Image (cartoon, rainbow, N blue to C red; front, side):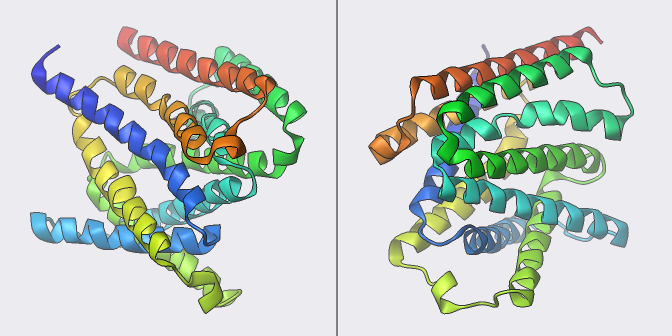
Length: 294
């Protein structure tokens, strides 16, 4: 393996570890999901803007693109709200396992945008994943709401990824990221003003919350996104997809170490989780082989 590729591969594992740590930070931050996401997107858009200033890159785009990025920003904002809500009402392990279904949601969403038929094998994989979720729900019924939130977050994440697959053909990933973060925080701001309003009780941060939010928005959001784009220039899609499947594994291990008994689940939960992760990995391998053949 060339030195450059090895360096990128190790960097990719670091990024997956960082993304897995995102869920840990969500559990450590004491404020609710909506203010948490508002702070995350606000800080992240500031960091990305600073990146543009330092690199002296242009941000000018047309009105049609602004509308597209507004839609993407709303989707990613709602996705993060559901994701952190899942962590708050359940725990990190439940949220990450349910979120790992995103690749399969993508398999069903892609045909709608790229005008292809749904693959029978992907449909079969979807049914197996449902059986894995059933195993989890059968013994972890008190986490049902958390699983529902995480599945909604997973679906929105898949939709967001497919839409960005269309956008990235015309715009750089940095530009897409900046505007979607900007419109996402703008959307949440309007939602808060129209409902509860900004109250000190909801948005008050203690010192640890502020530090965790800075880490979440800078390292886990702005930095991870920008670096991930550069890494994908030297690594194959197969390597990236396969490595990304380790995110829930890293996250769950970290959660058990940090939170102890709160994150320890039943044997049946881990059986169901293993079924889901195996199907996601197999799906990624088969998709990559198909693309290679084509």
